[in-house]
Image (cartoon, rainbow over all chains, first blue to last red; front, side):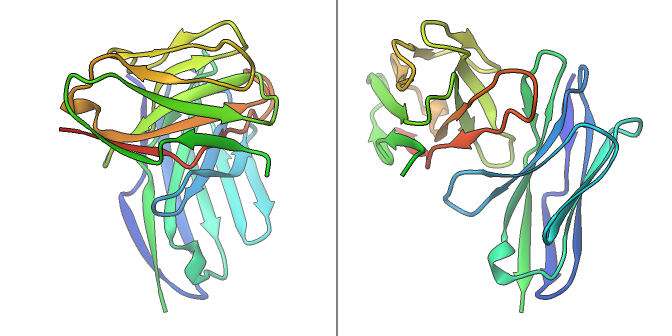
Length: 109
Length: 115
């Protein structure tokens, strides 16, 4: 079966750095996505990786290793507004998105 | 403001009743999707449409139907609601179905409770 694993919840301190991991087992691979979802709101797109390596976008970076079935989202200089759930999703060989259950990130002052 | 509009925002429904969740986008995206989000589970695809006039079944289609009469509208109908359909429903759209990033834009969601 297809599976996306990410930690259920993480806690970090304002101003610090946090890494949210995602491992996947899917039928084929056509890209990996990270979305941010604040409580009670819609998911919004953060990043997209299709080749191995690091994609940097401001305070957020996303890494992909296709051989290991592994990605991480790195958030630097954490702000209180970064408190949200972070969703990992993989597009499979049928170009359908398989979603992880999300990681709830709690930022403490 | 360009985006996706969903209605209703929230609804409490008696089991056995028929319910239609509305979704309208103004971005002229070809593809549209309906997902449900339940605590502890990832987003699960109910139905999708790659272009106006076509629809397809997702991971959890049973008990739901959709139509895509035009580019902008993609309603989701529960013919006879059951308590297991209590969930938050998200409509989404994208301007490509395969190549490229194919980023999804989501509506604000419809919270449905079936009693």
